[in-house]
Length: 474
Image (tube, rainbow, N blue to C red):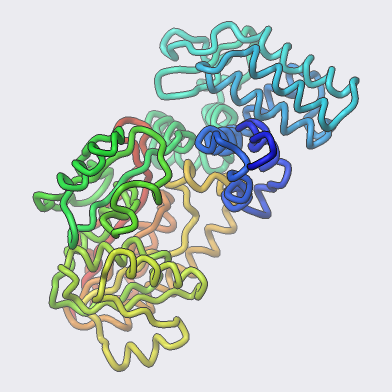
């Protein structure tokens, strides 16, 4: 940034959105390339992902108060308006005047006076129609209030949302920028109150959780390092009540560290020394439910980027024999990077095309960890593009892949061996229904335990996912 003015967070966010198409590419890599141009990295990140998560609702507000379909607004101007609208509607701590002024200045850089005037007019219309930028939802008019958190929202002076009583699916879909078919599925499966919880969780700013590397440190030791570096954090137990299935007991040092102030993970004390891994609480439970043993031979069939692979090694004291593979060879390199950083020796990385030979030499396995590719409906807060891409037909195609992988895992298992089947989805087609179908076709397997976790925005917030432990009988 030497010799040039650093870009503001809003400029970076707009630049990312100008290059981003939710159906074709990912915002993260675009953002990472541009972050070096700003000193407001965390704020730029929040603006990008917050705007994308809420884009449908934002566009509805823009169209209503601009009296113009968003499709008719030039994309460079539209993205300036989107970022500013996100702040006006979802970031009440930021002053309205500063938001509108910077948007107008940004418009001047890319458009003429008439178009700049249009940007100014739209944003001032939105501000005029806001009656309370942060109102308690319990006191708000539900059709006039865009939800921000489980307890607050931005109230307008006119109806902007469908009636939740008459059309609950349409209401949740519009208010939370989610596909209507998906919300309809959730309402049918979980009911209105849990669907509301899922929607808030899907639009939250997700917390970062740290799992200490038990081969090198403890939660308390790592916490002390963070304290000395003046990092704001809290220690949280890695236990979430199950929506379905069995909750296993955990060991004494089963806690994780939640970061309360934004920091670059790679700059945290202990990262370079391999003292921790970033992992969501829900994701961390799959390996714990498997309860891997030091004497086991374990296959991690969809290992990349290796977070669960490292957890397997840590929980077995780096004494198990672990084979890690993935069909994506580029991402498999991440597993290698993680084993090196964390000082893990029990993991052997095998190219997917060589798995057959390796399985013959080493297998059958005591356990197969199967973290299958899925729809990501439990992690929509992090996989911000997924809500614009996932379709019912795609889930149907995914279940075919998941079923084939489950069959592959079963063929590699020894008698009394276990499969840990996990997804980041909360759709029954990818979870308990798929496992039930497998068990009907494979009578020599039984379901030992399963657990469905719905995402939550309540503290400690967490993602959603499913785990099944399937045991071979003969």
